[in-house]
Amino acid sequence: MSMPLDQDFPSLAELGDRFDELAARDAVRQPRRAPRTSRRPVLLAAAACATAALVITGAIATFHDGRPGLSLAQRAYAEASAPGIAHWRMTIHAFRDGGPSTTQTEEGWADDRVQHAVLTDQDGHVSETRVADGQVTARNADGTTASGPAVQTDLQRALPGPDPLSAFRIAYGTPRLRQTAADTFAVTDTDDPGTQLTYRVTAGGDPVSLTETSAIGGDFRVVMTFDLYEHVPATPANAARLKLGG
Amino acid sequence: MVMAPPTLKLSRDDPRQFGAFYRAEVRAVTRYFASRLVDPEAALDLTAETFAQAYAGRRRFRGDTEEEARGWLFKIAQNQLATYLRKGYAKRSALQRLGLERPAADSEELQRVEELGEMAALRTVIARQLEDLPDGLREAVRLRVVEQLDYDEVAQQLSITETAARMRVSRALKALRGTLSQHIPMET
Image (tube, rainbow over all chains, first blue to last red; front, side, top):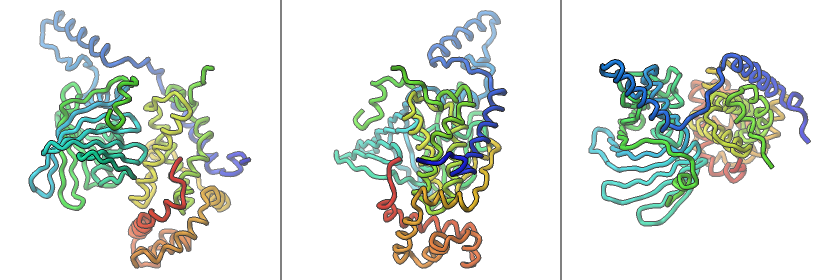
């Protein structure tokens, strides 16, 4: 039987006390959260607001997507952090050292832990990958499967979660996220300054594209253009999409 | 029977619940790092940063059970370990963002962390495998892991910067990972 934490590991016990102090301060500052609602009612309400505004003022609404009080970063964050399973379709162009690009399309699903992606290369070959808990399982175009530890390139490491918007979500609210143009945000990794992610979004905050650039091992650029990015409810049917063949 | 929601879930709206989650899991997380590393200070640094990230990101936890909460926490830990092995040092970004510092551990506590992770056995394995390493890496890992010198002392002995010493040790451990994986638990 183990000893009490403060006897075995006093520094860890003290760290626990510091978390308690921090939590007590945050509990005072933190407003109670309103229950989360699904996106659809929000959008319906937003549409109603926008319509009402048009009727009342007779002017062109400047409400963007019906959330006039939100900045572009806030709208983009809301899109990136909606509850449920992320689902996307994208076209990926990869360029190395100014050479010709390779092109593939990807349809993917991700929750906080798992990513399942179906890739189609420029020759029409289809392959699948599923990454979970540091392990990748792949089904190749010839139907064979393989699995092992997920070995990541530096570029892939720049995306710290299963969802392509996870880097944006994590950087949001920190100096690592900068708005660099009217519709563009850059995420820099202070530990890997040679690698940068650039997100372009619509006025409503929906992702348009994600570009990764890296100077590590030569100039390398990957441009992912979103045809679709949404969150679907975590129903059993949608959760099945997180599996190979799903 | 209705299961009580995990304390991590409760902490999303009431941060004061996080302390209970921390105290329930901190030994397991420390053991996770201690059994995969040979540096007790690094194991404590990574443990502290893992919980800081969990606190900062607790509202993103969507599970309903203690198992899911544990899985979520160890996913953060895995990411921390991967980053540490790649970069050669423990990030403290979440701790800094929260304004927290890890309290210093005395030699007795560091010894208990070593025992928790059976680091002595791991050191023996590494010492046997040193011959397989390139010259530049072998001496760095020997000084750091086997002789247990601080990084500034390793740097001094090899006439390189402390950053370079960290990188050499990190690369050496990475090169030994295949061997190490046979001696450390792979599951959380």
